[in-house]
Amino acid sequence: MMMFNVEDLLALPQLKQGKLPKFLAEIDVREAASEVAGIMGYLLKAKDIHFETKYFGFSSNFSILFDKQRFQ
Image (cartoon, rainbow, N blue to C red; front, side, top):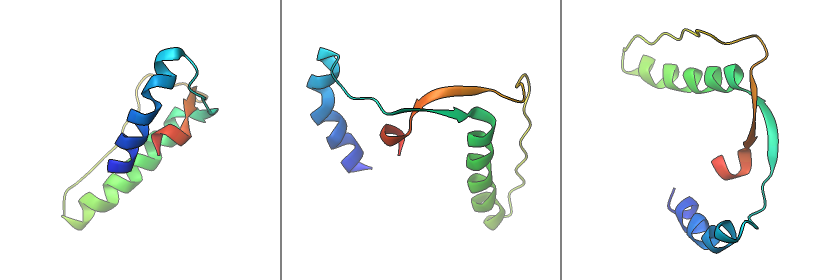
């Protein structure tokens, strides 16, 4: 986590100049949310906490452009 913050601080001048490279890829929002829910569900189940996901207002193909390299 700390490395992420240091890298962001080092990239700040590039960001201000509009020269920060972006590695955009299309991701399915529902698929990403399901992946996160699976991880959270696993952690919560270990603590005997019930977890349920419901999706409202999502079409079957709801995707966005996303910089996965920055997010990891």
